Every structure is written in C-alpha cells, then in structure tokens.
Length: 353
Image 1 (cartoon, one colour):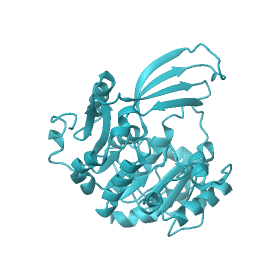
Image 2 (image 1 turned 135 degrees about the horizontal axis):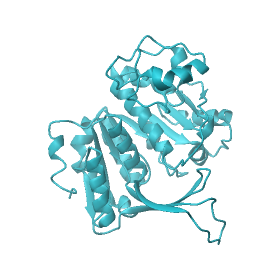
Image 3 (image 1 turned 90 degrees about the horizontal axis):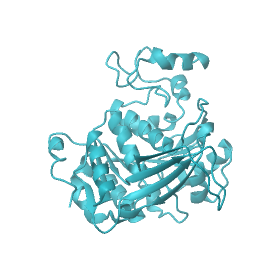
Image 4 (image 1 turned 45 degrees about the vertical axis):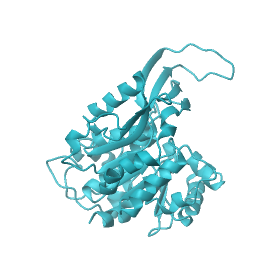
C-alpha cells in the first residue's frame, strides 16, 4: 500500500518527468576532527540527523532543479519513515509510490565526517530491501510515462533490474548508478543502461581492473562499454571524470575545478542528477558546470571560470532555467569545460529532439 492517498492528488494532472526507484536512508551524522582507528573511541564536535539514501538524494536534486519527480521507495512504519515522507512532500516530490512497511525499520546510514571532508559510512538498508516487483507494478504507469528513470543498488538488484527493464521497454531513458557495486552484476544491467555512471572504486569492483588514474579509468570504461552500455561515465573525485559512448568510443578525460571538500557524502548523487535532468529538460547539455547555480546568469559565476580557461562562450547569455535567455547549442569548446556532461551530449541531444 502506498504511503498515503494525499500525495498523488497534485500529480494527477502532471506526469513526473524523472522517476527514481531507489533508497531512502535516515542519516545519523557525526562530525569529528579525524576518523577513529579500529577499536578507538574519540570525541566528535557535532551531531545531526538528515535525510539521505542514494535514490532520495538524486530525486531531491532533480526536484530542486525544476523537474517534476516521483520517488518509488519503501520506508518503515516508524518515526524515521514518517519524517522521510514529509521531507519528500516538502521538496515537491510525489510520494504516491512511497510505501511503508511494518516488517522492517527505515534504512539508516551512520556517517562520520572529519575536518577534511573524508567519511566512513555504514548503512543498514532495512525497509529498502523490501521494495519489490509488486510495488513496481503499482508504479508502472508513472515509470512508463517518465522521460528518465534512475536507479541504484541500495535496493535489491532484482528490483533495480525490473525497474530498468520496465523503463527500457517503454522507451524511457535509463540512468544506472551501480552503487554499492557488486562484482557479479547481472549482465542485463549493462544492456539496459543508457547512461552507466560509477566512481573509480565501483569501476574496479565491476571490471577487476585497478583504477588509479584517468588512463586506468579509460580502460575500465571500455570494458563496461563492451558489455552493452550506451554511455559510460567514471567519476574520479578531484580528477574529474572519464567518459565515452558507443558513438564516441575513445575515452575522454574531463578535469574539474579544484575545490575544498566539506563533505563528499552525497556529491556523486548530485552530479548524477545535474547530468540527466539538464540534458533531458533542455535538450542540449550546454555549458552547465556543477559549480554554477542554475538560477543565475552565466556572467555572474560562470564567466570567471570560462575566462580563466580561455573558452569562448556561445551567444546565449544565461544558464538553463534562467528566464532571461535561451540556451544555445554548445560548441566543442564549451562542452569541453563541463566536467560531467560531455560524453552524453550526442545520445541525449538526439533523444530529446
């Protein structure tokens, strides 16, 4: 049974463009000067409870970027679960297919973050693992009418595979984030993924190759591409990412701006949703950077970055989502600036026309 009949009302007239099938985790976060050693007890200086989970993080980011979104997930019938449903509603996310169960607690993630932004995370998936194919069948109409369907591996692989199959069979673009990675991933995941996005650690687990440099990432990406993915992106943290596609099979390393990390816990999830929603909603990828707010004109924050890199800007004078202008189709130089979006340009531009 869905969490409530109420959330679906506002969505009867509008179809969710982005449907996320995935996890909701209540984050129990401790901040400390350094990470503890094995068996060591140390003092922290701050504690807070937040809303996390790869699926929900990606769904919230899509909603905040302006997408009509729907979250297909399962939480416990407990205080954490009730709070989570309310949080999704407050972010204008449809909770029509947010289910509650008495058979398991809401998933939790215990997170320790040090002063350098490094972290240690332990997740207890709980109710997330009870999301099943019957739940997906109830959400089938929403999935089949979406523009993009996104899933990960914090729910059971069987559920994620069924979600990808449903979306793919209905011509819905799919984005698969194989995290946490499993070495014996079902081969069908690759063929069903229009965009396959993982980090270097996940790439190592999936391919058996060492990934310690952009060149290594290119080799791993080729292996993943050969398994049937349309586009492969391997993120490399401070080193940017490496990407390639069936139409552009030569690995391309895209460096990124160096920043001081505060907390890397959800950065990957944010990057994934900026990638897919900007691409689908605006038809072209443009010159959007992770570091630029989509509500501000280019010249406010983007221009200094472009000027430092000596990149010529198209005639359009605003970012996607800014009402003052219209996004121009990016030239090669502009696309080369973007650390995340470049390799998906051809695939998603063609699919949006």
